[in-house]
Image (cartoon, rainbow, N blue to C red; front, side, top):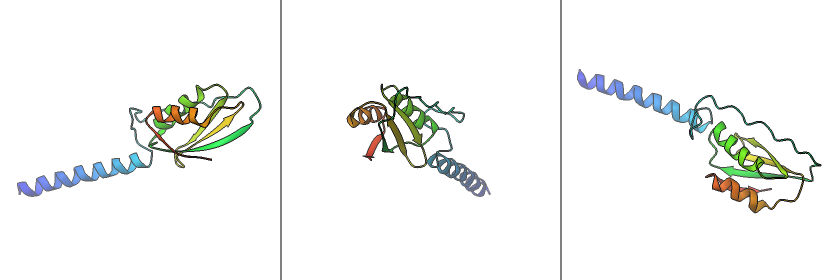
Length: 119
């Protein structure tokens, strides 16, 4: 009888862990210290004319907190503004002046993420 109770408890714990893992990998749960109530980072407005737009594919983003960290990092760079898409794992960066790709890649990778490609 005690074995059945232990097995039932283990099954319940496993189901809860599985549900949490699925939510985490869909980007719906709190991770990276973001908690469940992460507020979306506001968009940065550029004052000049947009001269180009690039898409950075990024690996390692799992939640809204991850996108907020990357957005804040990119938006600190003068002359660029980023919008992030968690589902597509990408940052869409608009430029009002020339900024080297390596500058943005360095900022993103210093935050702990990996740039897969730049288009």
